Length: 118
Length: 112
Image 1 (cartoon, rainbow over the protein chains, first blue to last red):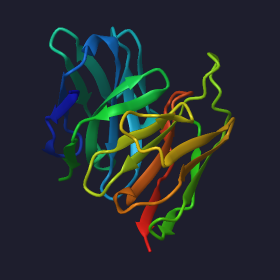
Image 2: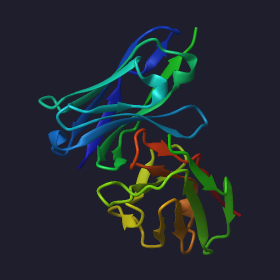
Image 3: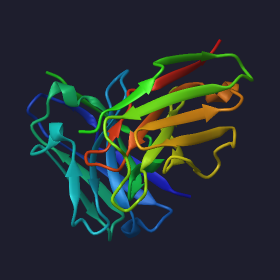
Image 4: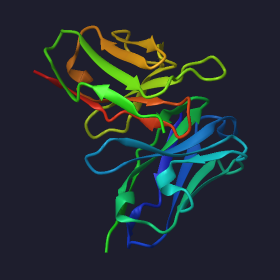
């Protein structure tokens, strides 16, 4: 059974940093692209970032470029999102999702809430 | 960026009746590899999203066959042949052809 478990969310002040993690199991992690997708409270879904199987390609939505970094550790079946210079508009539930060419999210985690507020 | 526009925003449906959601993209979603990467997701209240359809019309495992996807180029449709109570939630289309991937704004399906 595919499982994705996010952790690392919490309350952080504007300008602060947070690192999200996603533990993957039930599939061969190194064979898949992986994604981060977020959802602001009461709002729709927003794709944030994707990373290729070997980490050689990374893509980001414009609003997080230069502030967020997606990474992975295939030996540990782990996906990460380093978030710096956080803003109030980054407040959202962040989902880890399995991806492949042309799609993000055939499997999703339960999400972790990031709140950016003073 | 590719803008995905869904309609309607809200969709009240009687149980057992059909439902249809439209999704239009601001650019063609035909990829250079020949595939069209248009996906549909369902998000039930309080749950994580779940993918229903990928590459326009392919069902994900476990998705009831009352759901179907169609379309091409820039115009796509998700149809539910007979709405059931468990179908309540928000439906999103998402394109995976162009970077960044983008979602539609969502269509909220409710029972009349």
